[in-house]
Image (cartoon, rainbow, N blue to C red; front, side, top):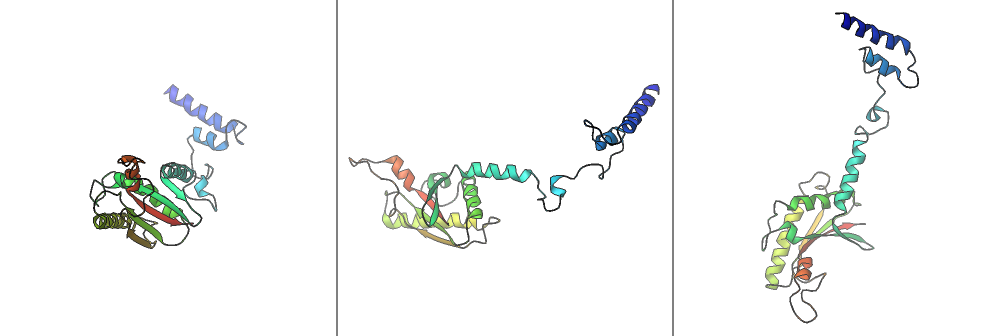
Length: 201
């Protein structure tokens, strides 16, 4: 009982001795020590200030994380467009047009760029390597492009954009499918198997 009484007296003395808060103990801290907290005693959070975002500093952290994710994409910039190359091998299984479970991570990065892009239609173009029949490759590349565009069409902040979808098969490579001596270039073919997402600048 004696101990409780001394605690209460100590808290009361602390509150009485710090009416203005002093240099080290703000008035709100003194009130808290005395067991008298209220919303009015606490300074407003950044999100409560007039004209400030309700998310406060949390938004800054989120934006930084997104920039980090986006920087992992293969991006080419021209005078008129920003081209994001999504590797088909990261999105689809061999000879398939259905997204793999791991594809969403890559697509989310591209979706963030679409949200930040200027107004205008987004082009989604499928490409293959040079192996196989031309007509088959064109059909597969178009199906893959439609799958990617359909995924974008379900995303908040992206679905309202207009999408132009096409497949070019093997007709627009960005790397050699063969080496100079005519041998297969597996790395070059892998680069050619892609879905391009073209954003206006």
